[in-house]
Length: 74
Image 1 (tube, rainbow, N blue to C red):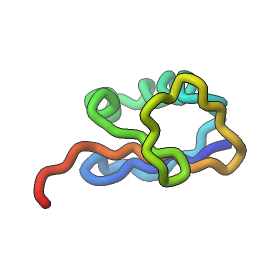
Image 2: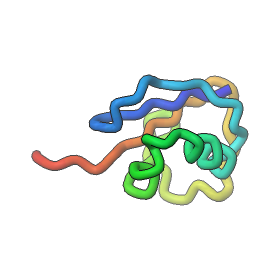
Image 3: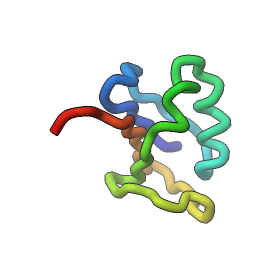
């Protein structure tokens, strides 16, 4: 099981998910109406490291995924 955090203006509480990889995670997150607008815009971090290519990554139990929406300011 992995924990998913939604940072910044997404405004959702963290969830736990049984996804084994990013493809499964995306399928689960697309079921949440509020996330559909954010998913294409967000960077993704796995265990606090930004992921550039998620195609070959398999999750381990207790991994943490963070969705990082674009922000303005400096």
